[in-house]
Length: 201
Image (tube, rainbow, N blue to C red; front, side, top):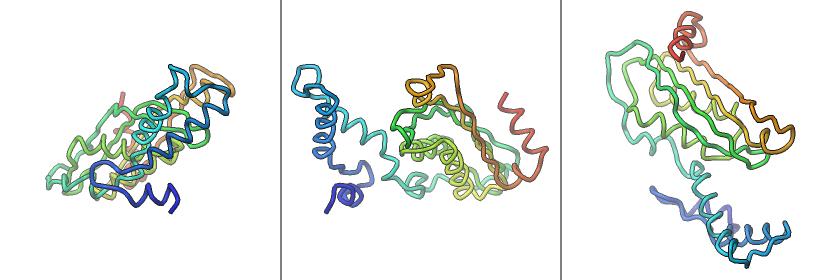
């Protein structure tokens, strides 16, 4: 059984049992290939720490929407726009494995059900803690909220700064990226969409 298959199968409800020893060994090899001495004092435990950090940063692969929401969907007569702003997110660019950091805004039009407030942040984290591109992350969040709530409309906006553009390549320090996905009435109704955007100001 290869390491990836083992990683996928050895999961629990709390924390997946990742092949940390294998990850640690690979990080040690990477340090050596870069010309470093993994045995020197400052790097002695770095492969182990890096393996644990990467396991944490990619734990979204081992979560699913049903388990994450855990029944926190409640009946409600509310049918006005609900907005959750400024949800912090930290993800990893799938092209260079460098971080992108930003915030997410979510709006939805309830249709008989509302979602527990903390679950929006957990949904964002579940998808952000995978190797990602921002465009895909934005759509995954929107579709997950739609699936869980059955809302009449969902809008998601993500704003982020990408280290792959700031630390390397073009090295543009003040650049940022904004992506949006609108579903249902937030896509079909200009008035509803404008209300959502106005409430974010």
